[in-house]
Image 1 (spheres, rainbow, N blue to C red):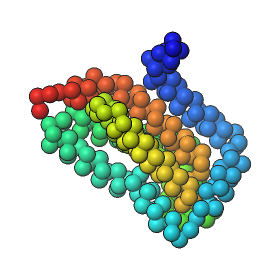
Image 2 (cartoon, helix red, strand yellow):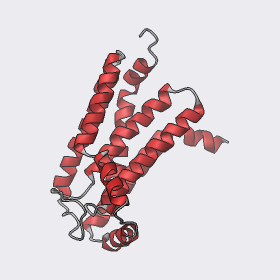
Image 3 (spheres, rainbow, N blue to C red):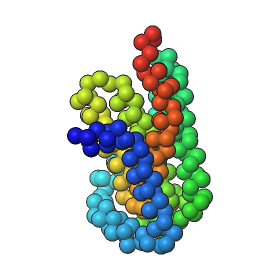
Image 4 (tube, helix red, strand yellow):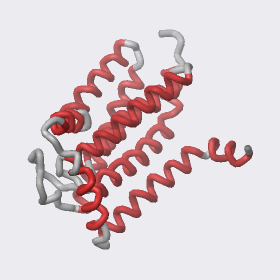
Amino acid sequence: MKLFEMLKKYRRQLLLTMAVCIFLFIACALKLNQLSAFDQQVYTFVSLAISKTLTPLMRLLTELGGTMGLVLLCAIGALLLMLMKKRVLACLMISNLAITAASNVLLKQLFIRPRPIGYRLIEIDGYSFPSGHSMAAMAFYGYLIYLIWHKLEVKWQKYLFTCLLSLLIVLIMLSRIYLGVHYASDVLAGAAAALAILICFTSCTRKYCLLELNDKKD
């Protein structure tokens, strides 16, 4: 029981440590050219599912983690929060996504990893590591999960929305591999990096977020 309580108490620190370690491990493996076999095995497995029926769905899923899709969703979310007089939350939602996007640009320039050369189902430019879609999806939908856990009081609703949004994040990550524009290590590193940023961001803004969520005057 004491172990469970300790894990619960320090869950943020443990999750942050895990995310940072995963990213650093993959980054080091990339620098040492030790990811080729892993990436190839994952792509071979995922490519078995390629079909004319599934491809349109994967294209749609990837758009939900893309620039246009998330800018639109973030704008809608921020507008709704503004209408609900939750201006601080609206600013935090936008800031979280913007910080993650800027971090992705910096990391891509740091690692300069070319995209997969094999069979692509869509055309895209830019570097591969870490995946921008994975980072953005984790940042935006992960922040929604954070808000849900601090706002909803019914447990089954918390678990339901958490599972659905988590599944969406995973599917967006898989769509990047399926479409042949990212390696598996790209999406895993992207998710880990964004999770670390999200934990740091929510820790720094927790006070302001909870004040908005618990404000009964509106």
